[in-house]
Length: 297
Image 1 (tube, helix red, strand yellow):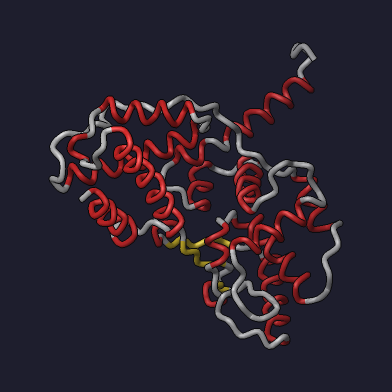
Image 2: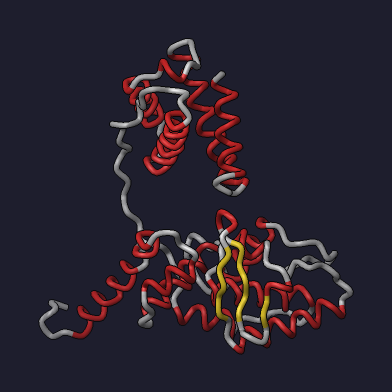
């Protein structure tokens, strides 16, 4: 019964909430783990029989196993969503998650690449003149100039680019579309790449492809970004998402309105964007300490 309800919930996430495959798989793994725990501890997977104490004991077991608080909170969030669904559809009458609070997590500022290092990436670093070299440079340029998520970049198609209006259409989370502006410089780079792509005989509506004309996978995009960022920065993390952080931080550092940055990033809530303002505050503190005669420096 519990497995059938879980399957129904996952279908709801996929088809009604329009969650990505990756997100749905994450929910499935977390909730399946909870059902396995119930079988072991109370010898039943009856979701009606679950109490507040059962959930709290599961959380304690996760913490004792050494799992970090962020991962534990993700599992709790998945379970809360599941039980809200069950309650809304009259599969249960009480919600054992109502009083559950997750462990506190240390707040980390988003990591980003300095502006000088990004200038080195595009103005100093050598890219080969062949198809892959031009593609890699364009890939990095798109990520830095638009703040796209890796999955959004994978799905970007040639017809999504409006060269006349200098915009691109992006399909974001939950199939939500947004229109982003692009610079004249990026427009020229896109036109140059499409010309090379055509000359190579690579016919694919997806913008970024490999030498065989197949759409780049997310893992391939990660490797390209990791390789080239590694040449200009010593950051531990050198992923496509770091360029998204960099995009947002540089905009705010240069005076962009936070609500505009929220729309550019495709965030549903302003709170998700506000974390980047902390980097701006840290920059102001640094400037103050370096410049004010009474700062103590």
